[in-house]
Image (cartoon, rainbow, N blue to C red; front, side, top):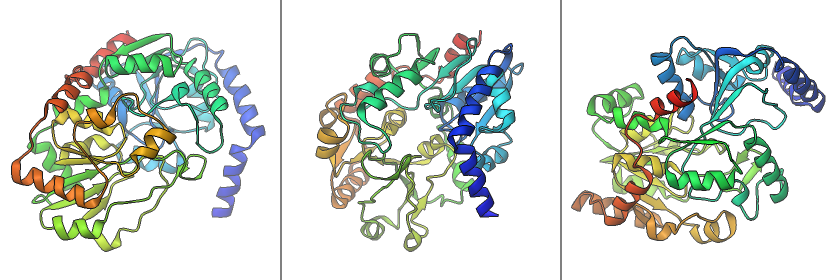
Length: 398
């Protein structure tokens, strides 16, 4: 059975099939728009999450007249079934018809280049993070597999040219997005819709429910470790490695009586870490449907250069930056948009011992919001008031 599935997968991904799909998509796109149909997609159909999920939830509550569907990777349809969400298998014939005639697309990552946008379809690109590391055509030297700098920039600009609206979480991001994406249409500076949840659901009742649903101990504090991926460490195109530099055994000895660690790897990371020796201390939630719930239940965030810290800052809780490779990442791999070492809203550390020192310091002295952190919050989180979804929907779905 698996041999047949692999064969069918190769057939679906073959050049000739994509050619006919593109022709069919173009012809279907000439049909009239279904003006009340919206297609949502998050991270290439692999998740029910992020800004598209927040907008979807707002629409089904406040605009029930719309006909809504999720574009779902066939390997992840269980996520949509578990949440009772209407979905269509990505690249199926039904998907081709619905996607080709929908009035609206709400998507948070780039679509395959072969997909043409019909003339009267409205493409709302929500994107998925406030930029620290360089994006799009701002990247000086692309080190990702399957492309080079010139090709990457050309493809990025081609995709961004299809967008009609682009969501921005703050003025800082607006300036970067316009330049890095070559985007000259309407930017909706609304705050991120996904962060409405952090404003409305940051309470004891919600936290307890999430922990109970995931069988997490209620009597221990939660450390969320959410690192990003490295462009030059990969198995193949779209599948990245991750080297866990943290000494989990040492952390269990020092923290195991009071804390648990939730590990959340980036969706592009294809690593399967063996955590069997750390049962009841380290929990791998990399495939968890939406990180927003993990933010709410965590007491401390450990990250690196991932944009998660811009969102987590809304909770005004401690953050630690485990940046063991910062010189290489900053100078050779990506580069930063601002002085991260001076402006990060938390301590920068390079070893497990330093991580433990920061956590013990928080326990002993409490968490004090520094002047740098306060300035960070006002610069990047000033629009996050729990009404971003409302602003976006009122602008796009008039």
